[in-house]
Amino acid sequence: MPKIRASGLTRTFGRGSSRLTALGPVELDVEKGEFVCVVGPSGCGKSTLLRIAAGLLRPSEGELELRTDARHPAAMIFQDYGIYDWKTVLANVRFGLDIQRVPRKEADDRARSWLSRLGLAEFAGAYPAALSGGMRQRVAIARALAVEPEILLMDEPFAALDAQLRTLLQDELLALTQSASTTTLFITHSLEEALVLGDRVLVMSARPGRIIAERRPPFGRPRTGDVRSDPRFTTLKDELWELLRDEVRQEVREVTVP
Ligand SMILES: Nc1ncnc2c1ncn2[C@@H]1O[C@H](COP(=O)(O)OP(=O)(O)OP(=O)(O)O)[C@@H](O)[C@H]1O
Image 1 (cartoon, rainbow, N blue to C red):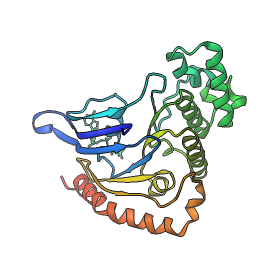
Image 2 (cartoon, rainbow, N blue to C red):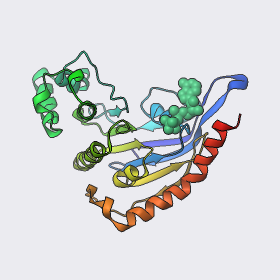
Image 3 (cartoon, rainbow, N blue to C red):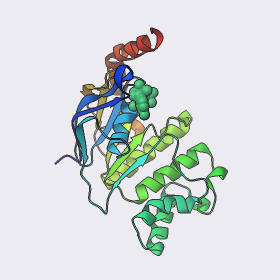
């Protein structure tokens, strides 16, 4: 049984002459423990897909089903971190556990243990304003992983970070999701990122976004960031870009030609 299944999933926005089909139809199965990356031109509906998966938006047609049990929910990480500035780092990481009514002591212990895994132990009592962008993003990751989610939904979580930090966090995410067998749906603009992280990379068309191709990077599991220097890496990246180029052109044409 797949952990995520979309069938005939479509989303439109607006009405009448301003009606716009943003996404679909999308057919998608993500198996337990699989890491699936989605790439596609700007505006093709990637975030819409993820927001539907997170229950923040409803499909217009079709459905998207997440199969989790109550103890291991789905967690979502956005590009803009989504952490609360008025809560300490520890309280931010404990947030999902508090919602799940995990007893205080256990929640504290679990939150602290995730903070130390992500190198943030000494910042437990700090407020997010005192942290760098990379540290804030690690708080968001710790918060999502602390609930031990069965499914992790990530919308360009590293897009705002510099290249070095991004590489570092990709490697951390690889290690964390592999050790916990988390099922992950990950949106990115970066083909490199998709190839480092994904068991599968799905390529979406220009709007309305449909899945037009799929590639399986031939790097085994457990995997580390070393795959970046694998000769097959560049070949695959070129191949993905080949698939994507026409879609990006189409999107640019739509934006520039009224
Ligand atoms: N709430 C909304 N109301 C109206 N239109 C919307 C809404 N949300 C998204 N759209 C439109 O739907 C289309 C898809 O948007 P979406 O944000 O899902 O694309 P995306 O692939 O994530 O884009 P990007 O890569 O630039 O982040 C866009 O044309 C966008 O303007």
